Amino acid sequence: MRIPRWVFLLAAGLAAFTAVGALAYPLDGYEETGIRRVEGARLAHLGEAEGGFQPPGAQLPTEAVDLRLLAYPGLELPAPDPELSGELKALLGEHADEYGIALLDLTDPAQPVYAEHRDDYRQNVGSVGKLLVALGYFQALADAWPDDTARRKSILRDTVITADDFSQHDHHTIRIFDVETRELTRRPMQVGDQGLAWEYLDWMLSVSSNSAAAMVQRDAMMLRQFGQAYPLSEEAIRAFWAETSGSARTRLYQETFWEPVTRNGMDLSQIRQGSFFTRNGKKFVNGGGNSYATARSLMEYVLAMEKGQLVDEWSSRQIKRLLYMTERRIRYASAPELREAAVYFKSGSLYSCKDEPGFDCGAYRGNVRNYMNSVAIVEQQVAEVQLHYIVIVISNVLRENSARAHQALGGSIHRMIRSIHGVPAEP
Image (tube, one colour):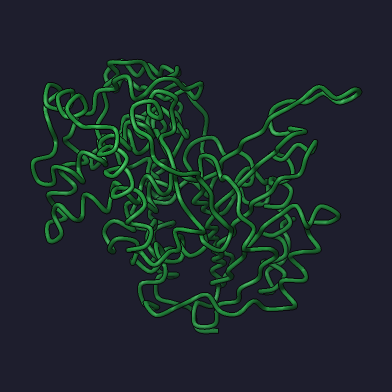
């Protein structure tokens, strides 16, 4: 099998990392991005600040965290492979019909293999919808400066966003790291908290802060409205929202977050973020619709990103790097089998409960609804084989601990992919 050139570049990047010790994207990205969480995680990995160590798969240097399908711009999802689809369904066991799943094996990108089971099953995907918030923001950024990526980068690096009422309320904690004192604070976002635009995007994706997502949504809408006049002063921001009618807010929301879906080749009837991620955000702006996605539509999103076609190559690269796991791995990404692999990941859950005799209902094991959704790109160099695949999992298995179920599934799929390509199982 022909080994793509980027495999050797990746191997060189890993060697460079080993030589310098603890630098890993985004752990080596603080100087470029200004994301303080990144510096805190880097220092924690060195044992010089609070926090844990990163697994081997989270230790790629920046240059190794890149788009893998730039040389295959015309690659489309092939027809499902019956044999692999059957194996994939078998992994789901007795609950197979409560899953929607899609798997694209890109280990040989010249001959991709697609497998699916109910890939058209549609449900609310929770925080996975933050991928569409990122799309809306980067699309608005590219529309404002289509030929100037340096200016786009400066907007991300230099724009300070101050949390306002849009950010409230959220139980997710953000990581606020003081670079000078090396103190780490974990708490929900408060009105008045400040961070760079890049930090808000990181808070939204790395720790899945709903508050950060709402602030990114607010600013994406203003980017869409004001273009090169963005960023605005705090006074101008307040005046804009005060002077904009409810119907105009809804229209601007849909222009910001729905229109980019169709512009980027996806079907709005299959994937959509219909509202803000906070209660106050929903109060201020009526998005005008429900939120949902299918495994296939999310696969199309990730595939476009890997080809550099999600907005454009620069935007695709930034979004992928923001998805690189250097926070604590959870759910699907926490499978022990993935420890050595680079994982690009977003998950989302929604569950609800009712009284049921003999059943202890709780987080990720709802008995009314129990949505768990995972999007993962997995890359691992094993000898001369560069494993590369994308997995989308959507499930609603009542009363089951769905976080553990996705973790177990992540391990099973990785073992299956290794076996397909003749890579021995881990000892």
